[in-house]
Image (tube, rainbow, N blue to C red; front, top):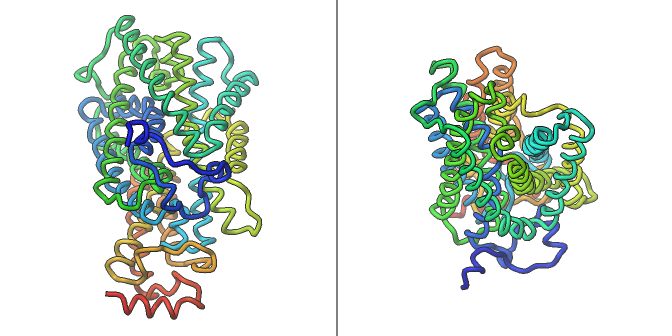
Length: 475
């Protein structure tokens, strides 16, 4: 195999490229080499979000305090990501489709899919807002003006184009976009070093002191990502060959997370180096402001290139989730690409909110919902199915005639975790505990519920008797 073949996928029809097996299994003939999948995921690695989050953790915990939540995120995202990606690659199914069989039912999975899909509206807005901020900074356009919204829409439209043909067009984008990003990044770091005094880790001090509250807040920020990064990787990991084991998927996740960690540390370096000049920590954690401050027009170009590269991922993954939700509740199918356009339009309407002001709250809510959801799936697969043998662990059903419409075990468990987490969001107890409590309660409720009901809600009543005999007969 030539070097080029390691970074490209198999040929397929245009219709299959566009639909990208959003509501069906990825066939064995359409599996991609791991380097090609990892290349697509480099868009996520270099998102402006990571530069910003690195600066936030730096100001919150200083050095070396910020390494604690950073290490926590890398380790747990690698572990959970390797597990769920392996299941996804073996089954050839996206997480929303897996959810149908792993404890939620077809319509129950639609609820989780809608929540998951709209997470990407936030990330689409976040990345697009940073570009709008950079253009506003350089060209002196008001952030809240119609012109800024038009710029946001125009750059977002470029992401729509490159996400239209799914993995194939995204792979093409990253093949030229990654080298361009690296060149601009190196140029930017040289400009930063020449124009400003670099503030190294030894001088990174927490703005409010390192307290237990600050530490919990830092872990809360990281906790919002440990599962979400696994989810993003799994949307593409389903294209990995079925023969790749947990070690292989673990390597993909670890490489991605280590690169993210480097970007976050660079983000902290930039934030601490520029805060004396920008005068405010909120400005010093906004890449749309600080890249323009030390790179000028090149910083604007850098922000645009980076935004297009990551927003293809946001639009693609969001469209997969919403396609699955609609497929489960409506008889008439709507193509994945139209859901992508719908997300794009919602993003345009939501731009004036200035989503960057709500990052902390959003990550807390994300941690509650996505962490609870995925840990329920993992508990269902490894405990209820694999350990207790309540259902098969291979060829997981997802078709509507093979699963219950509503599986109360997953839904009750999810509701229990989310309700407890919501109490934290509404400050009944400290918010930074919310996602941790939710992700523990969800699987803790799901396992006994599924065992108590003997797994009878996995399959429709018509298929339940045959499935029970098969499980009993299996070794």
